[in-house]
Length: 256
Image (cartoon, rainbow, N blue to C red; front, side, top):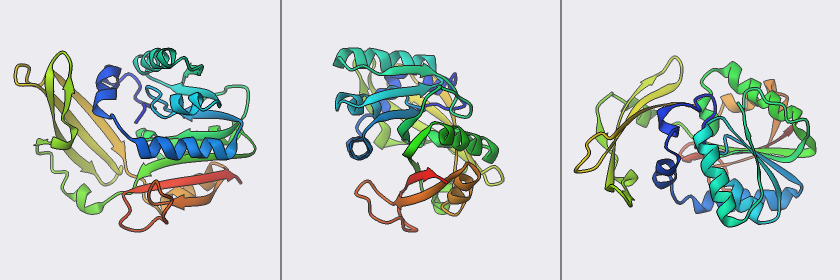
């Protein structure tokens, strides 16, 4: 998840920590590489974070541009691309309002990055900006989680250990992650506090993270308001149909 409107949040100030916390994602990387191969041409990723998706796409030979609000994330992305000998144009900017002076054959918003935009108006602004940057026949492809109302109802503000998020820091050792979340049903925003701890350093980082939920009935309407329409939508990285119990919503869109 790259940053969008919250690029200076503490959660994104340590880009190395971010990469360790959100390591993996091979299926998602393979999906977006496949989409780039299908479309050909130039690729733009919004909220590109540290380049987890974009650097492999660029390594396949595609001309890539990454837009990211967080300077720390961009610096990490540049470093990683340099290590791999891959050329990417990195741009600091806000996905709600950007103008790159050119168009792209594929625009990607991966790893829930769209969910940093909490207001419907901001989401529509983002889609309109994408529309302006789509080449004829171009596509917007993005993924967001499929909200689970049972999970949202359990967001009661109690701090709990997330064992699946534990990781090893070469300097600190094993890092455990606790999360306390509440759900604002009016705003459709989950407001969380993430606590990072080791045995020797409890709570060495405490960071807020706020993420919007966008329900499947909403997205086509928001896309239409942004001048886009849905071509396909999937419920997982194998391109299975979107169902009520799917964990993901993956959209392929074109200019309306």
